[in-house]
Image (cartoon, rainbow, N blue to C red; front, top):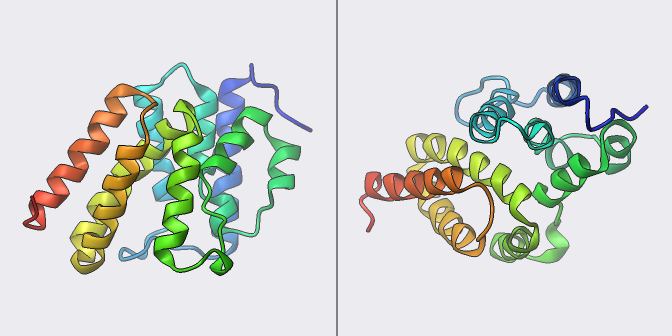
Length: 184
């Protein structure tokens, strides 16, 4: 049974519970910290809620943004349980490209192209995702952070839509991280 888009708070709670169960079912932990993975979608959803309080579909997508990419959940399952606009955002945010696309650089290029075309709503959630990921990566893996920050800069340059204050925060987090690593 699908939840109607007008049931915003119910939809958000359903997304929270569903994402928590999906990530927990595979024992997923946050890289570097070994804390429950759901802490990341929770932080992304909180950023989206703070900057887009009247957009429950964005907050629901923020909770769900990694379930297709990281868990056993299928797009069909999401389509059975959530409104189409939420599922379309999750699909736009998901890096589903496999090794057949090529190496990391090739996969990130495909991801960048997808997100550049994805529209403002998907880019808004992606800004929140980038903001939350940056600090942890820079703090715990400075070597990889240099690669990640180059990818993040290219992605931010390609994404020209989305919520302005989150976009500014994403750029600020990039610039702070680059400065912390002694770049720029």
